[in-house]
Image (cartoon, rainbow, N blue to C red; front, top):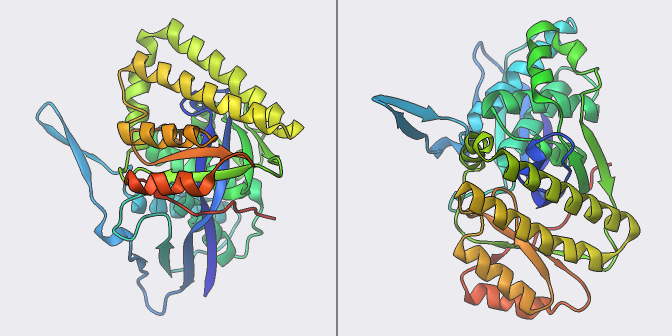
Length: 357
């Protein structure tokens, strides 16, 4: 049996703006994993099984009188897409396909099945791509894994930056800028997959960051799951009507996160903390202009407690639930901070950074 895994992730800064080219974000990979095991089937049928995902909900809405099923929160859609594109690549390489069983195990959700917001759809996509490439004897090159996973994920989700894919592939602390989505759509129509994954993708930029030694990342869970895809749909639908404000948001985020990346490179934790607070303000303004809720009351409480004990805090990811993050230093009273979180029904998540060699 072959087993591969991919870590979950959290956004540190640059959310929403990272959907556009030339707008950086900072992410981190965590030591919670999706594991995919694959072995050749004994008979003529294969099995795809996951204990966690077997009871997954299907969300739907109504468009006129038509029921619209939203499968983008269903991990099986990402697994099937990962299989489709990875096997397409294998066929182009002249590999004979086999029948196999896939077994998926996820640590990215709470014991009662609620998601933490650690990018489970990205991690399961990456782990599936890795397992299938390994099964067919193809070298696990990070660039190949990222590109196949990004294509598979984007085909299902239809939006997103693939920053969570990058974190699951490359690990550690990461500075990320997304690629030209229209270019990729055109390439998929006109070229073979084996050619596309070898090309330079316009705009794509992935760089590992080294945090200052005294920096500590704290994570608090609101216990309220959120749907990134639905929030991104809402903001994408509005941006053409608020073009000037939207462009200002992109510029503000670009400057803030670029300066934060420079602070990482300089080992300047105080400047990193200042820009965490600035990015919180930028996202609050973005939420107001789109009439959406990013920083729900529970996350505001999480942040205010962190700030009281000398941590710099903000929401992580699309917001409206999931997690908040704190950049702490030697002056942060971490034990008291976590104690107050627990008293306010916020769960500290004791995850550590996962680096990939």
